Amino acid sequence: MHTLTRVHLISAVGDGAFLVTVALYFTRIAGMPATSFGLGMSLAWAAGFLAGMPLGHLADRIGPRRVAILLAAGTATSVALLPLAHDRWAFLVVIGAYGICQSGLTVARQALLVRLVAAEDRTRVRARLQARINGGLAVGALIGALALAIDTPPAYAAALGLDATAFGVAALLLSRLPEKTAEQPVPATGLVPAVLRDRPYAVLALLNAVMLLHMPLLTLVLPLWIAQATGAPRWMAATILAVNTISVMLFQVRVARRVGDVPSAARAVRAAGLVMPAACALFAGTAHLGARWLVCAVLVLAALLQVFAEMLQSAGSWEISFGLAPDGQHGAYQGLYQSGVPLARILGPAALTGLILEGGTVGWLILGTLIAAAGLLTTPATRWARRQRRESPRRSVQP
Image (cartoon, rainbow, N blue to C red; front, side, top):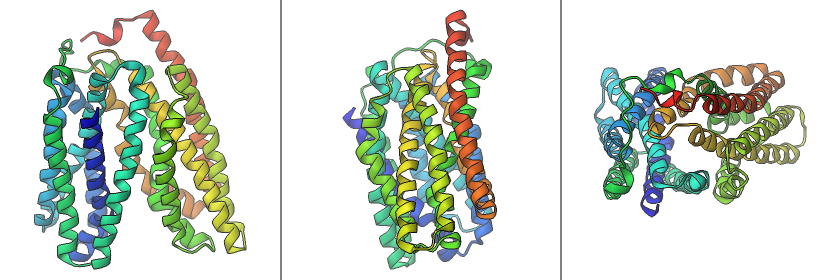
């Protein structure tokens, strides 16, 4: 597990540097119109959304270690090629390859974790990995911020080079995992993944995608909300992001201890759905407060509630995705379940900026209600999935 932890940590450092610098590199240094860059990123995550389940199915057939190595190397190659993508079409091809490799790598690493870790320990191990990921993202973001402060082409190129190097090192580390542990024989699953016929699991994946609408909040919606609708200083956006990152580093493992099986996971997701509307209500209220110190205090309180809901939802969703997937098909099942991540990246920014920045308080309350509904519906959906497996235990593993 030490090797897998290092893979996640190193990759996260690269991701942090990439996420902070890539937009400004292409719009300021490469001179690409912001609309073209935004379209390219949306298409990249759309490609990742479509590729996630096929790549997960491939991981079931040839082993998640092999697929993870290929996709980590593919991520490194695509990032290394980005500074050479000078025209729009070259950019679309390279950033599309990046989106596919990133989405598939997430799925392959989840399937690899299933092979390496006993069932009862998977959620706790995943929580520890998430804490390391947040730490790596913070370090990478600081490196990216340094590149932004220098604001020269070599500085941006160095940040992108760091990301490419990080994923190259990750591919090398993955290749050192023991073959006999990482790639145990699995039953043949045919050309069409059985998950496509698993309606309860598909419903749970959809509900998880709705819960993941919180993803664009901290990096996109809240900075704009703070600047446009509140009297708080703009640096509060960075403060809230720091609150989120540090909280996950310190408490994600502790929160995950509450989750030990699918029923407790469903309860955790339901609790997340009940906490998130309270956070949304507090965020909405900051537009109606006068004193700057009070606005800042309420923003921090709302951020604490939001990250608590995020940690509950994460722990619950990991256990649900692991616990309801049949043996030998975790790649395809993770591919479907994790598709909510690129979907949130595609739809979330446009949907939430319109809903909240234009709708104000009503928009915040709609978002909270939507997430609450998804959290509450997760409990009957997991019961449906468990009942189907008891009634037809072999249905989900037939080719």
